[in-house]
Amino acid sequence: MAQTAVLHKILHVREQEKQDAQMEQLKAVDYFEKAAKKLYHALKTKEQAELGLEKYMKTEVTITVIKEQSVYIDTLNKKIVALQQQVQQARKEMELKQLKLTEAHVEVKKVEKMIEKREQLQFETEKKLEMIEMDEISIRQYTNHVQN
Picture 1 (cartoon, rainbow, N blue to C red):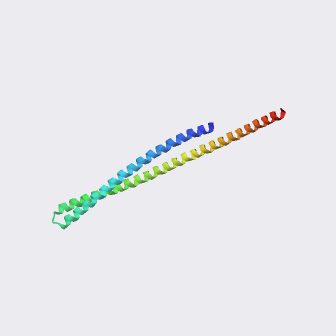
Picture 2: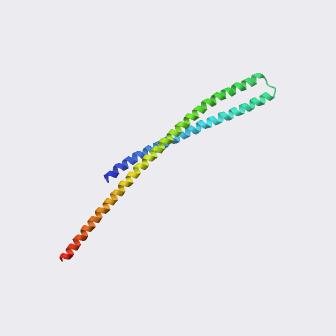
Picture 3: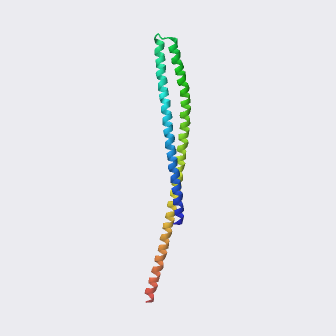
């Protein structure tokens, strides 16, 4: 039983590590989703700005308005590039956290399997001892019966 007690302690530690990894993975997913939403909204804004610029080009407006709109679109393009890098970094981080969670899950399963094997071995050993004791009792009873 002492063997499995140590393994149960190890299992508890591994399960805690798994829970920590799961929390980190959830945070990484949340961060990725937020970054992706920012990128989506920036792309949507750029699309609207380009449609506005196109509309300005078809109508009679001053060159200043067209220039301002073009500068705004360039600014959005720079923001989009930065957001794309942020999303890519967030995706890498999320994948790394998922990998760590998977590894932690595997470690928990390994320890659980070791505990299961040790408990099964212990059960079988106890059964064998019980059978030996039963055989000894039977032999004693037979010997006592034959002597009487």
